[in-house]
Each structure stands twice: as C-alpha cells, then as structure tokens.
Length: 502
Image (cartoon, rainbow, N blue to C red; front, top):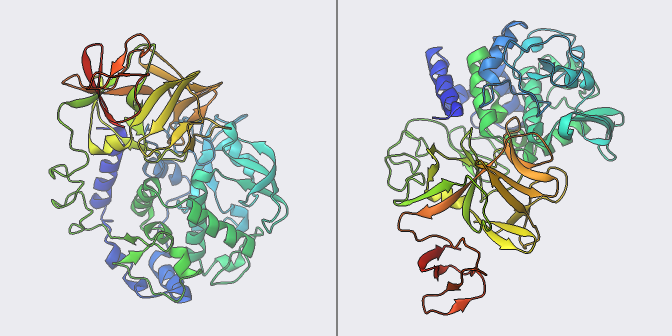
C-alpha cells in the first residue's frame, strides 16, 4: 500500500478517535437554504472561534495538515525542498532549501499579531524560510515584471501586472496553489467577519459583508475557479478539523463564493444536494449510504464490484523495460515507480495530479480499464518518436517546463532506457516527476526519473516491436505493409501474431 494511502487511513482514524467525525448535513445545518450575506453570517456562526493551537504548536500540527506523500513537509512556496518535520524547522537561512517556517498568508502586521488569527492553521502555512522572507508582507497578486523567482520559477515577486487593479509590488504563488490561497482568504473574511474590518495591507476595505478590495476579490474569484478544490486540499481540511475543530466551507463546497458574493447570491444552498456553480455537478456529502462511498457495495469503485475499473484484465499486464531498444513502438504506461503513479493519458496537462495510481508487483502492473485510459501509443518517426495518449492527443515539450499536448503529430521525442530508467527527451528537457508539485512535467535537471511499462499479453499477441524495415509486417491476408500499421487490428511479424489496439 502506498505511503499516501497509509497517511490518509491514519488521518481518518485519528479524526474519528478525537471525536471530530464529520457529517456535512449536521455541521452545516445553519447554512442550509441561505445565500448572500445571510449565508456568510450563518457560516461565521459555524466556523468562527476556532480552538487554535499555540504558535509553537503549529510546527507539530503541520505533521497532520501538511505532509507530502513522501513524508516531507508540504512547502507552499517552493517545489524543490525536502524538509523533515521538526528537524528542518525555522532557523537561520541563506538560501532556498535551508529551513521551513510558519507563513501567515494574511501577514501578521495586517491584523496586529492578534489571536486567534496568529496561529489559525488554515492560513498559517509551512513555507521555505528564504522564499517567505522575500514575500515579506507584500500582498498576493499577479506579477508583470519579476524581480525575484524561487527555484524553477515556482513563486515570483515583482511589480503588479497591468490591468490587475493594484500598483506596487506583489507576490505571486504558483498556479497549483492559487485556488487554495483564494479559498483561505474567503475563509479568513468569513471566520473573522467580526474582526477583519480593522485589517490593512491594501487588500481589505473595512466592510463586513465583502471586505476584500475589488482588485483582490476579482483576482481571488478568478483563482478559485481556475484552480478548483482537489484531494490534497480536502485532506488538509479534514486535518484542520482535527487540529482546531473547524473547517473551511469553501473547500467543502467548491464554488461556495458564488453563493456568498457572486452570481448565485439569490440561490439558497442545499447542504445535502449542493451543486458546484462552476461545473453544474452535484457535490454529494460523505455518508455510508452515499453511492460514491467506497464502502458501499453498490459503488462502482468497490473492489468487490465486478464493474470496478480497477479489476485486472486476465492475461494482460504491463512489463517494465530495463534496457535500450532499436524501436520502442508499442503501448505503454509512463510511471513514477516510487509513488506508483502513471501519467494519465486522459488528462495530460502539466497541472498537479495529472496521474492515476497503479500497483507495481515485481516488474509488472495489472491492466485494468482505468490503466487502459492512461495508456500511450509510442510510434517511431523520423528523428525519434511520437507519443499519443489514448485520448487522442500527442504529448511533448514546447516551452519552459510545460508538458504540452496537440491534436496533431507535432512533437518529436527521443527515448533511451538504462537500468529501468527511461529518458523521454526533447532537446535538453526530459519528462520527469516532481514529487513536491505532485505532477509529471518536462525538466532540464533534478526531479524524479520515470520508467516505461509496456503492455503485453500472455498469449503473445502484442504490438509490433521489431524494426519493420528488417522484419516485414503482414496483415492476416498475407499482404505486406509499409512499416507497422497505425490501424487497429491483428498483424503478423516474424511468424508471430500481434495486436494493435489503436
């Protein structure tokens, strides 16, 4: 079982053991049917007055709220650190990576270092000490011209971009945490609506209902939509409840800001049948009768359900490539082995979480309907290979660290394999896994290597792999083909049958 799953299990057991078991309908009962200002006031009555830990206690509490799947501290401002809880805590620093400390996303000076805001773990987050120092007390924003960037350009400091509505220096967090930060600010002005009227920083206006300056409010609304709630944020929210007994409702109800201040202020929310205003999809509560609960026997994700997409397909597996080949053509998973994650062929963007979990047994991975959706077809072409996702897009590198995709075969990648480590490269950039950012992307150095797992079948019906110029390929009628066909079907090569699935 992967470390992340173990961490999630221990966390859920801890929540139950400490008496903070969460039932959404009862917890948010006061908010049901409300919208606009009355909804915000109801939420204030639910989450206000958190039982925060001491400022020193935050360091220990981060082990519950901000532990990465690899056991290191989740760093909100840097994607290159590997801080150990407690050991690498706040101290002297000269550069990025020296230590982590407690960062007030709403700077302490803006609220006079008053409690309980000073140690509210929802907004006091662990970050690299050096990068935190560079942020200082500048507001979050979008940078037009950067004067400082953290490693890999993950965070930026500089003058505000034109059109933001704010002039001055701003600190821009990475895209993958912008939504998280926006929802933290929504939480802060709701949890402390009786206090935030006195906050400063060029971000607050002194009003009660909507106290954020227009430029900041518009930006945070945009960030929350562009970077929606994910499982990392949901898991942190559960841990927050264990630490201080309250929750961030803007995490529990994605898009809730639209019901409080936005386009849905005339629509009362239904706690039991909440609808995400951005997607139009229902967000069902977690309870034993919920069909999406994995403990429900009718749930399609239940391992005892034969329709479960994780059920292995008999006689078919993916086998790890350990050495180089003259032709890598075939069907593959691209895998980061340590965390058992495969690049998701149905979602190849370079954003966080662009993978599916897999289970590695020896040098094989079982083929399931879920893994089939993450498959890539590698085809030899002039100068290298094209890599086509099952969804139909081709992947490769275009600029920066981007993992780019195109509907046309416009990328050329080179592939080498040594000792099981696969280098899928475009120029000086190669496809690797970033543990801190939790995603596959292209990098020039660092990050974690990937491996190729090729789809094979026990009856030897596989995709052609030999050099077609040296070993001709025939269809079942005996007609020779010019190279390996890209059309699905069964072919003969070297006296053996092969199946090309797409």
